[in-house]
Length: 390
Image 1: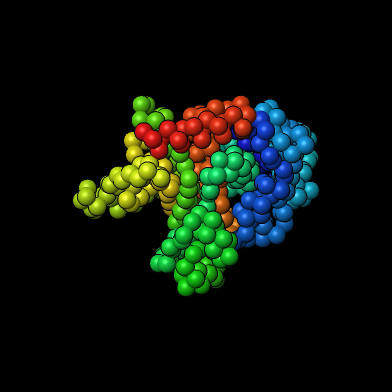
Image 2: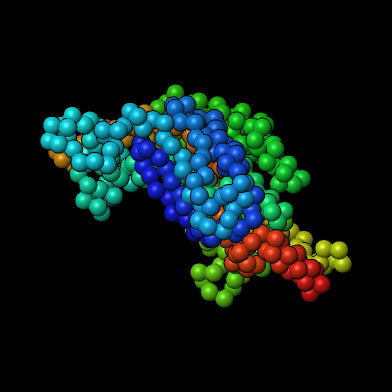
């Protein structure tokens, strides 16, 4: 599968076209709208979430509630577009109209794509950069991820995400019995954290950051359960599924680090406390005693749950602006403020779920077929039986 997204933060709509979704997958708009609403939630979100109530339109590739195998076009309208038609319109402006257009940006904000993108593409108005580099684009990445989750669900593969840390406040009690349990408990928390005491402290930290005109980041975790053995490959560097997942998580706006399993902790431990011992029984076949490597060995899934964490930096748009330089006057100034969140870590956990689910679903189809869900289900079932008897 593959997809492309298009659209700007204050443009008329966000669009994604997905190619390679198998036929006979049950899919309706509400399957996607659920995750779009989750992305807009979470403690610490800004006013934009009150303006936009994201709902998807399925414009192709789905007929009477089932995918046809053709490309799927998904559209999410920006309701705020009505206030931005002249500023963001596609048609050329006359000289007088150009003078009337406000919000030209010549002052790059530290931590954003503004200055680098302006230099790269030759834009004197950096709105051409920030409109596309905005995290608003993750709306349709979440939509694509929701389709991927539907594919995985057809094979009883469960996806869940939660928050481990916000602004230095760490969750201590994060035990869960299953991904379904994780999902239910994280959704009950305003910060998507399983530790109730930590949740309260996280919200207090967000409130303090907002009061200070500052922002805070954190760590999210995605868990995927019931994954078949052998997705990905050890044969080539670009076929390793853990590498693809790491790249996908790093591609999320403001993410600066990824780890799988115990991740960086492995640097401090002896091998006997890192690697997962192999066991076998007649009912389950091969398993691991532990899951320190997060469901991967040699770039391939082991059958244990996939566990991925991502680090999100604090959002760089601050109400206590940082120092920068105007590209026209070269004079120093305090960076301009666009509408922003004080913390978007709970929302980012939903985006992380989406991009990880996409990579796993794609690997599943690469391994077991692309054309139609019932045939792929038979292929997976046969593979699972062979793996148990191997």
